[in-house]
Length: 114
Image (cartoon, rainbow, N blue to C red; front, top):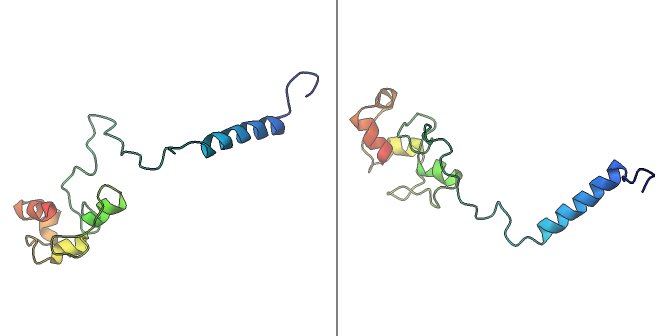
């Protein structure tokens, strides 16, 4: 301790770091484990997961939902991994092509909901 009664910055940082490390080591419920997904933050904004828009390279499919940890399985109803490419060629999915996806119509919506 110095004359002013304030420890130097390196000592203050070490004390704070030790206190935080002890607090996190003794915490039984870390905030990132099994943390529920956040709700919509703004009512005026819709979630990107709620859209039915399907693009040729990305969109709402089980593979993406598993990556975003909103589902546990990426399987399609036919048993394969459901990606956008798989939806386009799946025998059980309604048939649609890139033109349908460019301007959404009934075939594109049925394909997106598969």
